[in-house]
Amino acid sequence: MANTAFSDHEFLTVRELAELLRLKERKIYDLAASGEVPCSRATGKLLFPAREIRAWIESAKSGGTVANPARPPIFLGSHDPLLDWAIRDSRCGLATYFDGSLDGLERFTRGEGVACGLHVHDPASGTWNVTAVSRAAAGQNAVLVTFSRRMRGLVFRPDGPAPASLADVAGLRLAPRQAESGTSGLFRDLAAQAGLDLADVPLAPVARTEDDAVESVRRGTADVAFGLEAVARAYGLDFLPLMDEEFALLVDRKAWFDPALQTLLGFLRGENFAARAAALGGYALNAPGTVLWNG
Image (cartoon, rainbow, N blue to C red):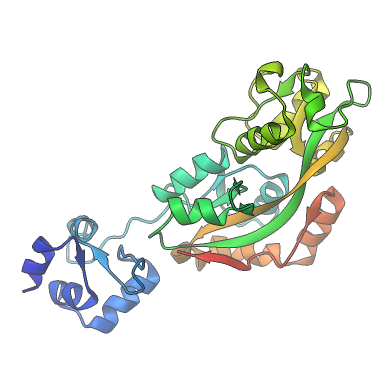
């Protein structure tokens, strides 16, 4: 009966999977809760995609122990200087691969890391991150939690052109971010609202991190960057605030309980982290680790 269900249906129920694996239904619930078995909660009840279950069974180790390939201990997504510092200073042991919110979100859904930093704005609803995550990470055993709010705007040199609004960027060399970054999409949306024609904005070489963008302004490679207040302060540059944005963390639920992420999450709730955020400026902390979305 279980084998018939396995071959005939796109999704299996808890009972069908229990029969297939010759386990009690309680054990199936435990496997789903721990993230060890692929499942979907889209209908309000647990369903198990037959194709992924087949691959999961076939990847079992010899001797009958089911193998569940662990995500590598890598933090993906958008670069944030405060998060970057926290990962290092907490000594949590996580590596980083920061190459933009959308790049990180795609890599996270492929299982290439345990967490992802995001600041993706949905202009239709005016909200941050939840819409993008609910679309891209539906069915993932993941949770979206708060990190901080941060001030973004125009960064420029004290001795150079001083834009008073986003429209004044016309004719100035901009330090652009990669297309996969949340910053790039946000700048396009704000430019459209301000009536700024991006064809009138000459571009410097692409900057792949927040630091790189502001550093290009300090060096004179660019006249202006759409960057963070905290980084502008660090480089001694002028800053025109434009938007208070929400930076959040998408975390694999199973990896959440591993020592690396528990160390980092504990650090984010500590006094040293709060003091660092205050010293950098441009950040507003609000209970880091608060759940915003459950996969």
